[in-house]
Each structure stands twice: as C-alpha cells, then as structure tokens.
Length: 266
Image (cartoon, rainbow, N blue to C red; front, side, top):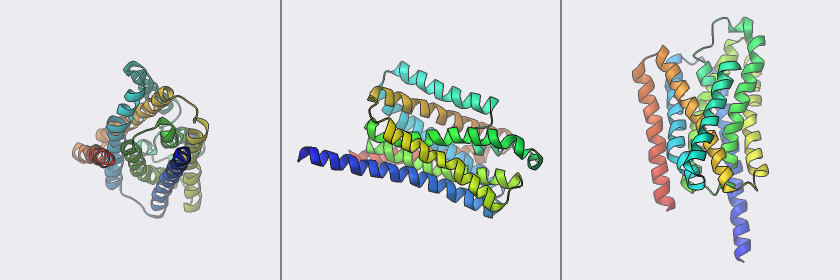
C-alpha cells in the first residue's frame, strides 16, 4: 500500500510538472499573440521586461541556488552557475541576443531588409534559452525540490514568458512578417520550452540529486545573465526609475511568494 501511494504521488507530481511546462508555453504564446495583434509602446514593454527580469533574479536567489546548495557543495554550485552565465554570454555575443526582451532594445530600423540574415541566429539563440526554461521545470520532480521552489519557479517563468512572447512577436512584426507568420515563428521557437520539459522529465530521471542540483545552478546562472543583461540594457537606453522600480517589484514578488509557499507547505 505504501508503495502504491508513493507511485500515485509520483505520477500526480509528474502530471503537475508537465502541465506547468505546457502552461509556460501557453503564456509565451499569449504574449506573442498580443504583440502580433497590437502595437505595444516601448514604455510598457520596458516595464514588463524589467519586471520579468526581476522575477528571474528572484527565483534564482530565493529558490534555485538554495535548493542547489542543499544538494551540492558550494564550489560546484558556483562553478555550474558560472557556466550557465558564460553560455548565455557567449551566445549573445557571438550568435544573437539570447533573450528577445534584450534583443528588442537592439533591433534596428532596417531589420526588414536584414531579417533573412538574422532569422537563423535569432531562432537558434532563443531556442537554447527556451529549452533551459523547460528543463528547469522538467527536472523538479527528480530533484525532489520543495513545493515552494517548484511553484515560485513556475510563477517566475510564466511571468517571464509573457514579455518574452511580446518582445519576440514585436521583433518579427518589425522585421516585416505578417501576423500569422510571426505568430507561427513564436509558437515554433517557444515549443523548445516543451522540448526542455520532456528532456528534463523523461531523460534525466536517473541522474543523482548532486548533478540535478548542478543542472539547476547552471540554469540559475543563465537566469542571472538574462536578468542583469535585460535590466542593464534597458537602463542604458531609458529611464532608470521605471526600470529599477519594475525590476525590484519582480524580485520582491518572487521573494514574498517563495516565503508564503514555504510557510504553507511547511
């Protein structure tokens, strides 16, 4: 009976994680649908980007790193986080901006003429980014993460996915694509979130908690890069007050959410 109960609990937990991955994908599609239908002014998009960046930093500080440090030594966690940061740094530097929210600040007015040149690099970079989003959600069950960690990570990613879809859709419309084509590309690129979830859930099941902790730390390093780069990129071009207020609100939201979830799950 105990084994049956454990098995049922594991199945239910797995179903929740798969639904979370699907929900994150839907949030990205919702953002893409809005941006391909409406012309969103840069100021509200800037606020959303900064808020979403804050949630990524918040989930890294309050959920991912503490959980990773509980499974792996600090030096290994620090090294794994550094590799995650370095990966996104080099992709952004030598391939394309790994986050559409960051790329939105650098997308020039002649993008229509150059879309064929940047499309492949953009899609590759964003696909890697979205795969790590899904991977972070997919490995939670096997990492035996606390419920507070699971739900704060899920919340942060869903909040992040909306402006991500908004920015990506806006970039593609700005590059001259029709609404249906732009939305189709958003759906295709963001589908790698589902791929990451499947890889994490089905193919990393037998990895030890030590390595799962390091994978989470690696993802956290990438999130830290996205948060820092998105905010710094926006601050250099726009008002610091709007950016910092929105960013701090995102960090605070995840911090409070994580605290509340830990209290109720404890």
